[in-house]
Image (cartoon, rainbow, N blue to C red):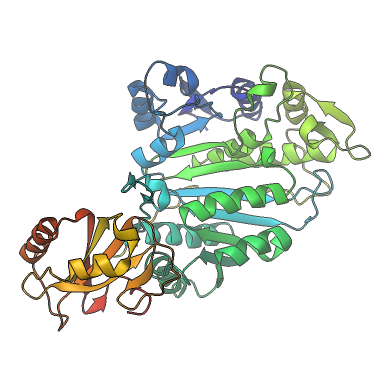
Length: 484
């Protein structure tokens, strides 16, 4: 390799500087062709009043290098500070979070020595869009946003990843038995894309039983693809099942920029003590080397690291009496890995990366045919705390509204139908969803909605939000209320 690849490096907070120093020493000793643009992120930047934790010049560095090797950071306590990871992922379109979770038994203690899975998590949308509102005295709302292109991108990435790394099976995890539209979209797209990869086995698990199976029988999984929140949760479960969250590395990949890191935090309680395990960041860096087209170096580092584990050189977090031979500090562990560069493990399978194709996974979305969209009703959300919250009172009041045939159809409270013909035992908050439709289910106009809201205001009700009810090519684009 004749020229060095420039990458952006952040030493972070807490144990971050120690594990970054150890990691870079290993990479340099292994012959990685790198040069560094070092940026400051995290606690000190937050305390300067920069809510994102990154100064503008840090974003400029990422635009230039397109590769970010990042140590953990500390986010100050208190409100007003944004997640640096979420900011970076969204700003640069890092739609895929890739977390390999592999057991290194018996050198790292685990009850599941055959575990070798990769969790591929959608990274940009879902509840992590962070769109929240307080709507009434009692009710708060978070919007869960799932898009067709966002789902297609991550699912295609999962299948392409499986293909590139000779994985045999891809499992989709959702909660589409409850969230039939949002999670249902993700599952539907998974089934469609799976047909394009007949050589790869596929299945689907509801996220609750899927999570339980990761904890009980993780060896049955290969590649898992899922939505943002679910992926965040199960990737930590899987990392712990393999023996230690401290070993886990993570890649956040977009069309142009990619970020590589450890999955653990900054651990300020042991900062500066030369105790931290650099393995998580090192494993993130190994993924980075493959991403930038240096698989030979990645292979050398990965095998030397496993050989170090086999030889019983362990940091305190994974030290085991009878298995470990030496309790190493952060830098002495790095020294041990460096001393074993060029060696391969004898008890664990050596790592081998495909050197014939060094290009990153590139995802091309298929064009979408637009559906015919028609407005057929509106849900009006109302803040109402009168008459003992009797649904019949609010219902009879709203029945007086009539905007060109757009009239009250039903009312729900926390998703349960309470008018007409609700159950007296149903507990009601001060937050009411009032669905308005025409008697013949015909289309309506925005003017009809505006007139309806005017009438609701004149009737003395406080409307706080609306959701339009649409059909797409005649197919309902909204959930039915219970009993509708």
